[in-house]
Image (tube, rainbow, N blue to C red; front, side, top):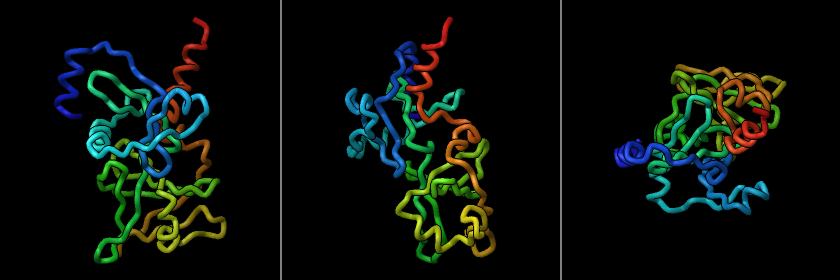
Length: 198
C-alpha cells in the first residue's frame, strides 16, 4: 500500500466504504461503473489513465471476509469481480519458457490448474493462502498447446517448465469463489446483510 494512502487512512479512519463502482473484468481490465451501469448490470467503462491504473494496482488488497478492494486514500472501494480476483496472461519468453503475469504486472508462479464447466481456465499460485487467477481468453490457444487433457476435457497436465508439469483438475464455475474464499460481489453481499432482520 502506498505511504500516502496509509497517511490518509490514519488521518480519516472513518470514511464510509464504497461498493459497486469498480469492477475487474474477465480480461483483467479495471472498469468504472456509474449508477446506470450498476443498475443495468453492465461492465462499465475501462480505466485507461496510466497513473490511475498504477495506483489501483499498488493498492489492491483483500479484507478478512474475502472481499477485494482498492484503497483510494481513506476510502475503501470494494471491487466487483466478473470472475476471479486475479487475471493472468500466458506468454513464452525469449527462450520459449512459459510465463504468467497478473493484471497488476507481477509474475504469477503457478502450482496447479483448473478447468471449469464453462471452459474457463484458472491457475492457482504457490503463495499461502493460494491466489486463484483466471487465464485471459486470448491465451487459451497457447494453453491448449501446452496442455495434455484427458478425454473429459477438464483434467490432465500442463507442461510448465522443462522439468515440471502442473496438474489440471475439473471445477464447477459456481464453486470457485467458495473454494478460494473470495466474494465476487461485495455490493450484493452488503445488500444481503442489510436485508437480514436484526
